[in-house]
Structures are given as C-alpha cells and as structure tokens.
Length: 265
Image (tube, rainbow, N blue to C red; front, side):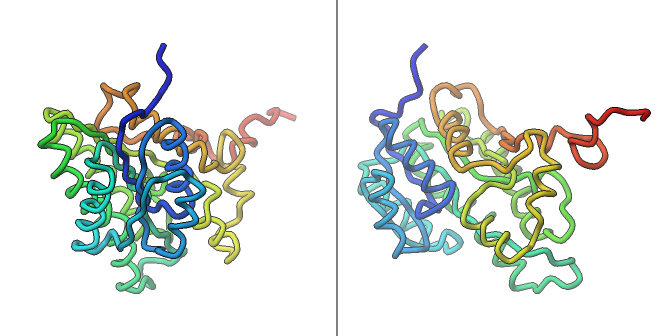
C-alpha cells in the first residue's frame, strides 16, 4: 500500500509559529508538501519557517476579515495555488463561570477560534471549490464534545467548529473538497503549558481521567491531521475525529484507573 505523501501539494497552516500548527507543518513538509505558515506572531514565523522547512510565511489575525483574505491570497501567490488548509490558529480561555465571564473576553475567544476558522475556510473555499479539489482540517476540541464548566466560551467555539466542519463537508463534497476536524484532548502545547503555569487545572486529574493515562503530544495531533488531509482519507468528509486518548469514549464514574481496581475487598 502506498505511503502517505504530499508531493506536489500546496498547504497553508495557520497557527504555524508554534504548537500543533508548527508540528503539523513540519510533518507535511517532511512528507513532500510545500507549506506556507500563517500566524499573528510575525516575529515567531521566521524561526518556525526554518524549523519546519516551510517555503514561506504570511502574518495576520484570522479573526479579521481582511487579514484572513490576505493570508489565503498570499499563500496561494507564494505556492502557485492551494490544495490543503490546516486551521490550527486558536486561543484558550480561563476557568470562569458564565455569570462572571467578561463579554469582551467571551467574544475574543469565539472570534479567534470560530470566526477565524470560518473566515479561513471561506477564503480557501473560493480557491478550492472552483478547482474541484482540496482538503481542509479544522481544530475542534474535547471541550466542544461535552460540557466543561467554566469554559463556556472555548467550548461554544469548538462546538461551532464541529458544526461548521460538517456543514462545509456537505456543501463542498460534490466539488471535490473535503472538510474534516480533529478534536484533541489536553495536549502538551505552549497554550496548555501556559494554563499549567497559571495553575488553571491539575494535570494529574487529566491523566487519571484519560484511558491512555497521559496528555497528548503535538506529533500525535499532526499525524491524525496528515491522515485526514491525505488521499488515505479520500472518502471521509464532514467528520470530527477525537484524538483524545479515549477521553470521549470513557463513560464511567470517577477516574479511569479506579474502574479497574479489584472489587469486593
């Protein structure tokens, strides 16, 4: 069976200056794609370009309509077209009850994560739909798969990304454009490290709740993304794939490990 390759494919990766975006960009480049990185962190892009083997960079805010259009157009100009898009740009939130949530912070989380994904998909679709080919992967989250008290903004945004993904998969399927998403669990990225540094959550609780007993790695998210972008997933569209160590599968009470302790002692 032919290995996954992206020879001749032209890819744009948002959030490409760090984390899952950077790791995925490097994997795509290693597998033969020509990659352009996009990020709001213009200073970090050049270093990431060197680390990933990307052929170009473009900077802007995915939540800004003009910036989103510019980044897609810039990538298409550098690459001579566009075949693949990975929407990894996003920001996190803090553990804040809804009745204490500042509206401006709520809006910013939704704008970057949901509106940003929508704008990048819309502009990429204007290239991919007429050419009758393309593949897009968005980043949802386990926080969008179920209720996480205190994370209403992030959860709402990620649930919206899942719905947007399925809608676009249905809208654009007949035009040869596939749209899927991954739903990562807690992954060892700079964003999660920031949450850990600020003691927003206890990592041991996450590990005990996860059937595989640990947080995810950026490389694991990158591999799942590469699969969905590749021809190996040629009959998959509109799907959100949990990449979560079994988090969303576990329906027991308490910690996973506790369910395997001998009973009746």
